[in-house]
Image (cartoon, rainbow, N blue to C red; front, side):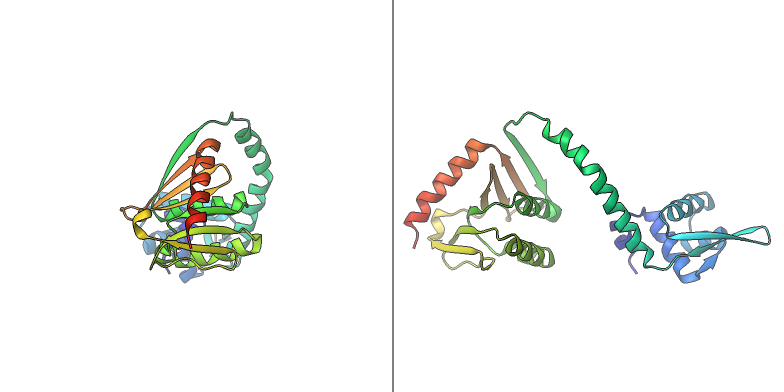
Length: 235
């Protein structure tokens, strides 16, 4: 199994390697785990402490020697659920601080596939209908599984969209989306989505992928007016 998947769940790299090693051994002393992971024994003790704290490993004393035992893998689910509960407890306080900021024009730049996920997830959080230029199926090409979940969540939230796309191009179909085609020369290679008081520009044509997010009411209004003008002219 790939240790990176455990890292994605919140374990450190060393914890993940120690966890997988102990999973194969079921029960072992720290020295044996260090041997399996090729880690210094001091680092192994730190990793095991972290895993014990997370409830993923336990330890017992036999003949005055400490043995570590792997917990059932289902404990990973308990660990994640506990993290979720903690997050829910602190979110109100975090949001209170965040919302105390005075609104101001703001431009943010997100890179890579994770940047795409961040902005699409923000559209879901906003929960408002949106419009867009340069509709394309690129998100599905780069992030097929995430895009599937995104479209499903959009339908569950009933977020409607009207989008313009270049003739002959492919789009992300959804029962809550309406598309109109316009000549390619009127649309650039980027996808621009206007939602709430934000404008997101997805630049699919550069590496790494980049999304520019403009948080400004007047900018969003200007882009929306431009869209409405083109929407009326489109077939």
